[in-house]
Length: 324
Image (cartoon, rainbow, N blue to C red; front, side):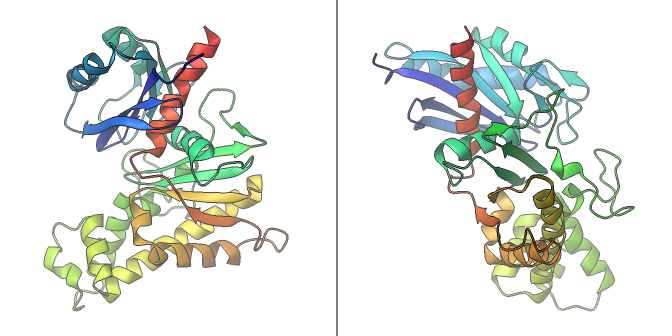
């Protein structure tokens, strides 16, 4: 049977931006784009904007193709219920029946999973984790997400929320995470937000520094920290060294939990390359038992940042089709 014209839509809902793409069976993204997530205070307005953005694309391709459904990756997305539940990095609070709302709006079947789980599926199918049965995907963006694959299966847990490694406590009593109220979670340190807070704290502790960071002292963000580090700014490099230290310590715990073949790092912070990778690897190995040392590959994603979660989310559509 010719499946070349059978398509799926993949949607990756992030705390700041939503990325979407039309995907075929070979994992080729035929059209893609994005819109702001944080612009919409109400989920209904967001879905209206998503519909208005995607509908012209759907209309332009549906005469020659069959769109089988929409797959969605989202923070705190529950695969079993199709709901986003208490996502700390989204403006919409409580339990949001996002899959049903999108399905009703587009008149297409829709399925949901955690955004990092979607990225893990994309990586396993098309990226650096091809052929692997045991790996962990860590997404380093606005937050820290994770997808755990063991024995070839994505770990979902009994309620659909397994694998929230970003909210595990790595420094007891440490930095406050405003979205959850937790103190010392990995996300408080190893996300873009956490990295920015580290830069601000270092500046406050070292007010006499001649760091380039001082030029934006009142409005530092992760992009500016990266730009300063690329200009060989010592304090900006210290920010990455500290972030890598915390991340490496956390990864050591994760390795001793599931003994993966690899940990795949994905997301905006990975653009820093060795500035984040070297301290992460060093502190991961330093905190492992000898039976785990030098066994786990620590690698960057092979997929474009915008592609992994889109591809993984779109793969949910083929599961829907199989179940029908």
